Image 1 (cartoon, rainbow, N blue to C red):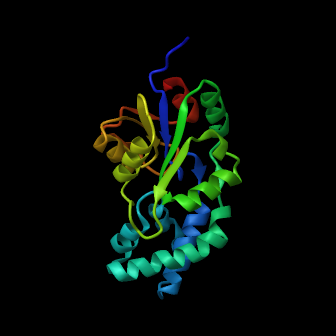
Image 2: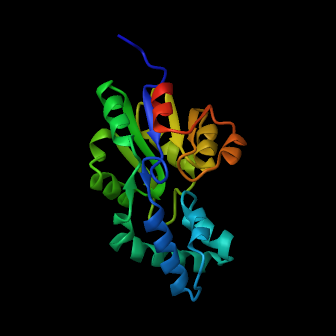
Length: 214
């Protein structure tokens, strides 16, 4: 029987499994408007995809900790009703997941998105059937760092030969913190130049290249 290098495969969600731009950007725009900010350039809000929303509202708009929390609450008002459905599946990703599952690999989701929303997104695309467990952040603002999330997956499973796949530097940093290999993808929201700075094990430009590595 063929032995694969990676028996356990952790996937990021936004920007890796799915294309979440419209829903997240609209949610952030709504939250800013509720705080009295009319952001004309929605492309600036793409930077919110991936990192912690609490961190991003403070970093990009200078909100205090309390006001950043208000922003996240407003964002969730929009996202839970509309934004969660403003989402697309990354082309070819369902085929990849299906083939890996049939090979007997163990698949997991490690995402900065709150677990409850991640599970809804996966069910909307009928992807939940491929994954052993889904671990995300908590709605109370805890467990938001990618390293913590990956550690929680590893703690709650019997992961053998794990690898983390994601599109942002946070995915690679989190993998490095947990001493596991990583595959950085450039078809999401991280640029090759930035991703390379964090020394991923591999960096790829397509779903087919992920398949070749795995």
